[in-house]
Image (cartoon, one colour):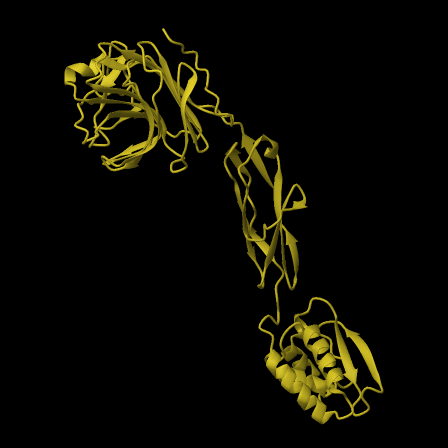
Length: 417
């Protein structure tokens, strides 16, 4: 039987001193259980003025739930007037009330959560995500509940929270987190989210310089200079055209794409130059979207148009998969053919790829392999000579990010000559 003299040591073993609030102790007057019982509410750390019952000694020796049930049998044997069900009930009350499995509480002196690093304000461009992070000290386990503008966010229960893609309506929103453990609760400071409007990226040129390869002050990346296995694009007197003759294979199309980072939804548009058409020579003008050029690799989408107006006229959408000669045909069409001065357009919106001639859709295909990359141009000459390269090309070029979801053909102030 525990006495007042050693009660404090038993309370420490039971974890009672760990509670931030008072705990409910049950005194059982052995052996007249359950004829008489009383409840004391004792603030943590204080020793009761009367002897603690033998049941505390049993509870103090249990180190697992399995041992608790074994202890019930022991208690039943020692206190014969107490039913097994009643003994189990009192045991559960005592163990739960102590906040730990008896035999010593590993968190005997828990500390309340304290924030070491507060969530920081974030600024992003519309369409991007934002991540908020908190660093907290305190006795584990710690639970987290993030709130946006004071309202709990479903599923946001970790030390960090990443928003969905942002929009203008999220500008000015505040985010905070409530952190809780067995000892208490702390709420972080609010962090502000600033969402900047997306600025549409565009590029336009009429190829005023004579360059091989095309650069225009570092704005172009070429398939020969950077990609190594393909041809470059050159410009002269307001015309962009290819520099190689392809064997088919190799499919080493002359290729150039714009430098920098472009949004996934994008378009390209150009005016066609085609003279001395000859169906015996396979001459293509191409627009590129979501295209990336690195050493020995080109990935992205090619929208090509054959420079003929007879029965051989053709148009296709092709996915480039990386290495030389590795590509996949996505869709094709006979098309109306190309005339000198026609305007060709390509759009990529989500997984929808569309090509146009003079504003009229020619091919529409779906593919989600690539979502990043740049607009660009390309040329393909098979069965011709280097002298034929300047017979077909582009006299101007424009590219833009598409900020709306509609795949309708963009209007870039370009029209057939």
